Every structure is written in C-alpha cells, then in structure tokens.
Image 1: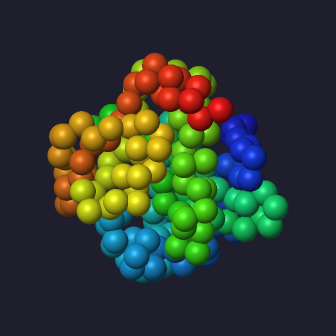
Image 2 (image 1 turned 120 degrees about the horizontal axis):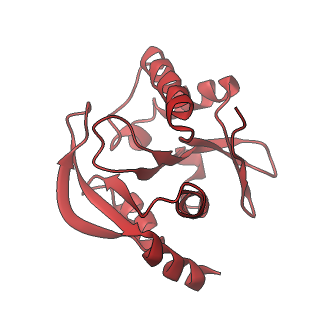
Length: 180
C-alpha cells in the first residue's frame, strides 16, 4: 500500500515506522504530554497503541502521521486523521513532544492534515477532542479556525470527558485563505 507523505515548509508527515516507537514511548512517559490523552503509558502499552495506529492505517487507509523535522530528521510527534470505533466523528488530532512545544509545529502539521482530509479524503467536517483544561490544544484549534461546539463527550475506551471542537470543510477553506 502506498502511503501519503505530506510536506510543509519545515515538516515531513509520513507513515509511522518502527524506528518511531522509541521516541513515541519516551513521549508517552512524559506526564505533561500525556496528561490529556489518557495519562502516562508503560512502553508495553505504548507498543500496543502504536500497533493500533498502524492497524488504523491498514483498515481505513489513513491515520496519524509521524511528524519529522525536515532539517534535522528528528521525530517530533504524531498528527493526523483518526476515526476509531465508537468515535463521535472523524478527527484530526495532535500530540507533539514537549521539547518541540511552542515552535508552531502542531498548527503547521494540523493545517496540512486539514487540507488532506478535506481535499483528499473528502470529509465534510472534522472534530478535535480536547480536554477543557488543555489550553495549548485549544489555542491550536483556534488558530486553525475550529470552535468549541459546547458538546462534551466521553472518549471511547479512555473514560475521560472532553469538549468537541471542529469545523466544516468550507470553514477551513475560508480560514486557510487567510493563513496564506
């Protein structure tokens, strides 16, 4: 199966590879990073989650991309389209390792993913599930033009409640025009 690759000015978004597991496991042991996505994970659990991400790609034809700094080759996190069983609707989600926070990588990669889901996958709308205390992710969503719907849902399988943020393809295209 050919997997899409997306390039931005600074980033490469590519299909996850086995070499990405170690930095992912390290990221998932960081309390600050994992706080709003189910908490710190033991590497054995992260391995299962990593395999689930690969399985999502196989079943749906898309999934979280590994985000890589083009200049250094450093793995920075995971961002992409996600629609597992019982999810409220298709999502673009993001997780960036702490050392890469505050550099604009999440909105840069997420914007490329929004282009991908709306232009290639032809989604009519997208959501982002964001904890009400996760102000950095809320800021990313706002920068992308998403809004908080005011709806709260429980994340299937995680037992945590989050707010549903999102936008339509038309709203994204109007916002994207202002970002160029």
